[in-house]
Length: 79
Image 1 (tube, helix red, strand yellow):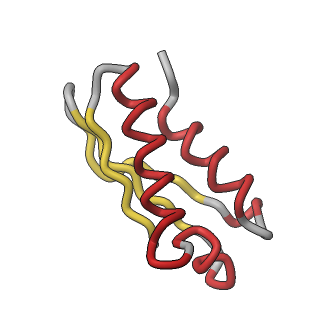
Image 2 (image 1 turned 120 degrees about the vertical axis):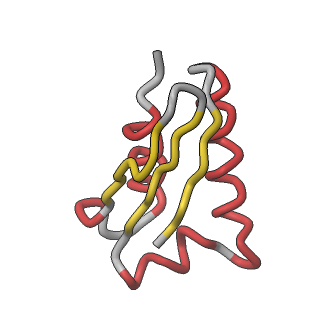
């Protein structure tokens, strides 16, 4: 089974300049859904969000695919 928390952290670390500042926490989890909170350094926020939110949308889409394999629905909050 895929570890969704680690998957999100790996995606974020590949994008940002400060990979040591990437923190992923689980804010809510049930049998069918999970909510993940991604926190990055302030200067890296633009890289994670992207122009018009395109990178954030792509990250959420990748996480939905990964969660589908685990039989869950995922919500990604970026802060």
